Length: 269
Image (cartoon, rainbow, N blue to C red; front, top):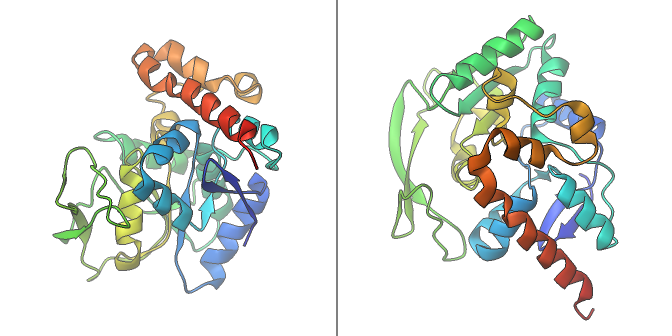
């Protein structure tokens, strides 16, 4: 397993994209265990700073990918340099490319209505032998609703208002006749996707589960992604703001992120 660098109390995996891809594929082929993957960016790290339970869940992840230019900047300033930025959307697409000619199945869960299916279609057009076992905004067959603990260490996390008294109602499948999904991409948005994976990975027929946020929107074409040169200079967030002005309140979190990093830098060791 890779080294993790502590950024605002969250361990972030120090590895290149190719190292991550190789590790995941080898894990699917050779391990009998399960793998939990998160993709922390500045917004997620700020949320974790204010919600200890969510921070604990992030630190339970086996891999925490550096999904933000701001995280790279913070690691450099704090003298804990990360090898590379490794975005969830890029890892998701590259994984599909790597496994398309292998007996490895993938699934797509979450997103807006119809977007998971469109994402699967787009990837299968690009990688014709990709084996998709599941695609949908929610589990759609052999369902059961189970009350499971929400949050950790006594802290309940409200997921879109459905948490109550430390319990969250989650819809998950009974493992009757469903074929195992080797890699499941979960796009509920944070913190719901991380909480859902943490609560359910051990009881669903999935080997690797990865929270991917808005990746389905990009791959399906519902939302245009910033050109590669914009991403390379760390301004993808600005491009998203220009095409989705409603994100301004979320982007203001970046200011708090910068402040928290500087405060940690200046704090007595």
